[in-house]
Length: 525
Image 1: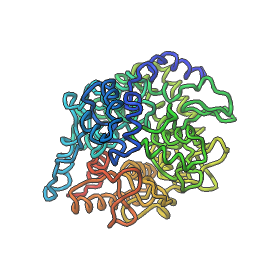
Image 2 (image 1 turned 135 degrees about the vertical axis):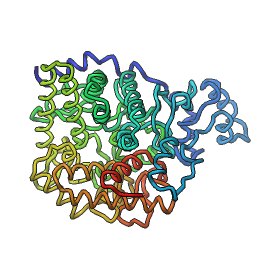
Image 3 (image 1 turned 90 degrees about the vertical axis):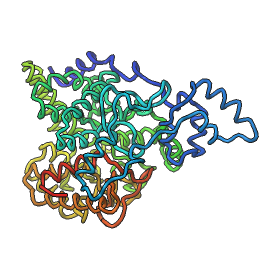
Image 4 (image 1 turned 60 degrees about the vertical axis):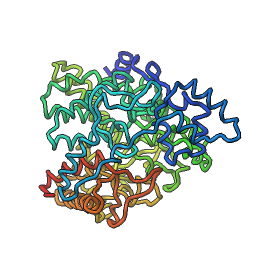
C-alpha cells in the first residue's frame, strides 16, 4: 500500500471526527456586534480577558439588553460588561512563594496552584471553556486553560515529581479532545477550535509508556491515528505543487506539512491587535489573518521566523513554509503509531507506518537541510527555496535523531558561535520586538536544544547551556519569587519582553524543564 492510500484509509475511517461535527459557539459567534465593540474599544487591556469572561445571562438576552441600552446617552460599555459578565480569575494571583524554602519547593507548591480538577473548572453553558474530564495543569497568569504543547514540558517536571497519576490524567484529557474534535485544540477554549499546536501527543504517550509499560501504546492507538488523520487531511487529493490544509505536495510528489488554521478571521483573543495589524500588511486581510493564526498554531507567535522581510509582522507567510519542527514531530507520531501496532502484533501496519516515517525523514532531509547555510531550516514551497531565517526550531532534527553526524556538527558550531548567550540560547538572531525573537529564550526550545546536542554527544555545550539557563531561572526566582514564561538570555539583568501581552508568571513549562534539568545536572537549590 503506498503512502497516499494509507492516508486515504485513515482519513475515511476517522473522517467523522472533524471540527464540523463538533463545533461549539465561540464568543464572537455568541455576542456578535457586542463582541466587536468590546474588543475594539479595549474595555479590557488584554483582548483575552473578554473571551474568557463568564456570561451571567443567555447570549440572546444579553444582546437584547445591549441593543436597548447602548442607545441611552449615559450608556457605559464597561459598566454593561461588568453587569452581564463575570471576569475570569488568574491562576497565580493569590499565591505568594517562599523564596527561602527553595526553588524545588516552589515548583512542588505550584503544581497544586496550577492544577485544575473537573469540578474546579469555571464553566457555564455559554462560557468559552471546554470542560475536561480529568485533572490538568494550566500554564499560569492569563493562560487559564490547558495548552497543548506546553503540557508535554510540564509533564517532564511532573515525572520528576513522581506524579504519574496526573501525567496519565492529562494524557486522557488530550485523548478525550482528539476523540471529540478529531484533534487537540490549541487550548480547551471554543475560540481555539480552528487550530491545534505542535503535535506532542505521541511524546506524551511515550512518556507515560515509560512509566507504566508498552501496553500504553495500544491503549492510545486510536487517538494517535485520529490525530494523524487531522494533520494529513487532504493528502490523498493533492497533485504536485498543490497544498491543502496542513499538507503540501512538492513538485517531486514528496508530501510534507505546514502550520495552518481553518479560519481566516482575526483571532478572537487578539481581535483588535489583529485588525490593526492587518491594516499594516499589503496582503488581503483574510490571507494575513490565516498566516497570523497559523503562526499561533506553531506556538511561536510571533517570530521573524515567519516574516518574509525578517522583521515585520505585516509580511507574515507562515502557510508558505514547510515547518522543520512540525515534520519532525509528525515523524515521531508515525513511529509511535508503528510501535502501537507492534505492541498489538499487527506487523503489516507496523511496517507501513515505519515506511511512512522513513519517507518523511528522507523528504525532510532533502527540503529542510540547507547545505549553503549549513543548517536545518524551513522550506518556502511557494518560492522553492530554503528560508534564510534560522531559529532554535532548527534543533528538532537533532532532538529526534534525524540528522547525520556532519549535520549535527554544523548545528553545534552554529549554536556555540551565534546562539549561546549568558542565560542560555537565544530563540533567533533578530531583534524585532516579537517575543519569539532575540533577546528571549523559552524553556521548550532550551530543552530541545540541550537534548538534541546530548543525542550527538556534544555534552559539554549542552551542559553549558543548561547551567546558564538554570542560573538565570534561579536568579529571577531569588529576586522575584517567580518563574517566568520566558527570559531575556542576552542581558540577564533585564526582564524578557515583546509580544502582545506582559510577561506571565507561573509557569508550567518553565517549572517542568527547570526541574528536569536541575535533576539531570544534579544542581541543588
